[in-house]
Image: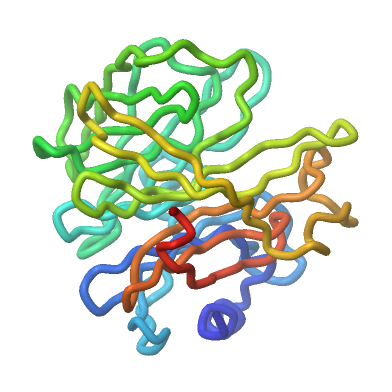
Length: 293
């Protein structure tokens, strides 16, 4: 991870966190959140670049927030990368809103060329939409994992990915009844291997009135089919024991601690996971596929 720290330090960025990664060929595409310089105040900005698989030969750092603003979308929060047909896309939301206002989910192609953001539209939506997980549909096109429990998928019904137009979706009915308490939220996008899709979701726990986020390996099977399922691994993933402890100067007063997983890809037979530590620091770690067993 030293290459990321060096890259962002050269750019003058501070408070780097929530790293997202995807591999295309011999390049690693990377997105993250940060403050642009020491002394800058929130909101955080989002950035993107690509590097060789060993972290060398970095490309230009793209300010995704500036690009979004140029297209009328001034807030680019929680950028997460995924791949469709050899092209890199980033999905993001427009942050938390108050009162009766609604935020939005967007998708934007970042490689091989930077394209305008595309708003994602679905009926019967939540007031605040975050963490849609996009996947390549087995019949072609894209689909969306909308919720972990019960597993809810969205069907792509309109708009073309990569064009300057809205993408429209329809919510499919869940195969099972909802649980009374939702303990899990979506995290990374997915790595596909045949009919299986591997990712990390977040287990949410409320302690002393504040939220704690931990990762859990998740295997989605037959996405896009009526018999789609999700299986959660037993392990809970955290950066360290000390990162779980209450910390000073929290950006979010409702947060106790968070190991927040935001990226997944595969390099050299191992998974590469990107994450953030308490909205303050970045993490990149290798993991064996046994983690999902």
